[in-house]
Structure formats: structure tokens, C-alpha cells
Length: 174
Image (cartoon, rainbow, N blue to C red; front, top):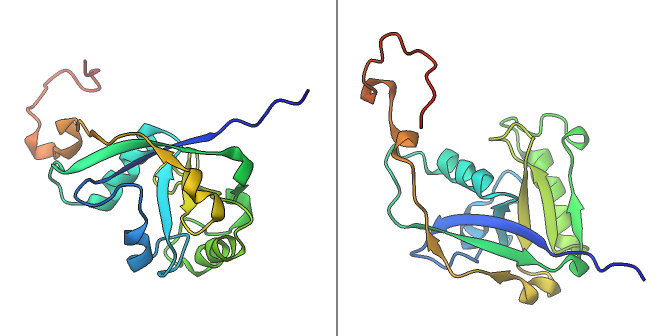
């Protein structure tokens, strides 16, 4: 008897003043992987990946006070497509026409609920998870109740904020 494929897990951090399991931001602005007008939720395969993605995009220099995270479960039976780094030359560059063309094609064809793409912020080591809200399987996507993000304040410090640690270069933080 063949085993049933497991569900795909993903993590999303977003401003909880808006529905977290919703792709309105991408619909309005687009992303590296889809053009505006597509209802796509962006997440990451790990909590840490999701945290890094949020940090690179929030760009405020201050600790966000209204962000929460959820764990998302996508049933595997609705399919997962992956775009690998080797398939897209200059995937991490500023010209996003090629990556958007690939993502827009995936979105329109609806062959899979999920698209896995390389994460620029992790140099392609980890993957981001795109979920098509207009795919018929989206109604089976589940998210945990939102939980507040506990930010480590050191992520927002500059070198000028750090006390001089004479003789302790490279010291490990506890």
C-alpha cells in the first residue's frame, strides 16, 4: 500500500491588522515571482526563513509591533511545483520580468496549489512558498491562530548601538 503524501508546511509573518492568510498585498503590488493582480500568499518553509523575509521587506529599522506569525498547512494532493535556481538565470537580480513570467504562468495554469521558489535573502539555500488563493484546493489550506512575533532587539541595532567589546572580537552571544 502506497503511503499518502504529507501536507506541506509553511510559515508566514505579516501585519496582523490585516488577515494573515490573505494575498491582498501581492494582489496590489506583485512580487519577484508574480505580477500585480494575482492573489498569492507568500510564506517560507521555515519560521527563520519567514522572519528573514519579513526583515528584508519591512526595512524600518524599528521593531514591528503589529506582526504575527502562522503555520500554514497545504494538502499535498493539490500539487507542488518547484522552480529551481538553475532554471532561472539571474533569478536574484533586479530585472524580475523572467521570474514574474514563470510565476504568472504557474498562477494562471492552476496545475498546483503551491509554488516553491528560491529565497533571495537566503541566497537560494531555502525556499519560499507561494500559495495560489484562486486554486480550487485553496479552501483546504489551514492556518494556525496568529501568534505574536517575539523579535530579538539585536536584529535592529546598528554598530553605533553596540558597546565596545575590547579584546572580545568574535565573542559568542548567549
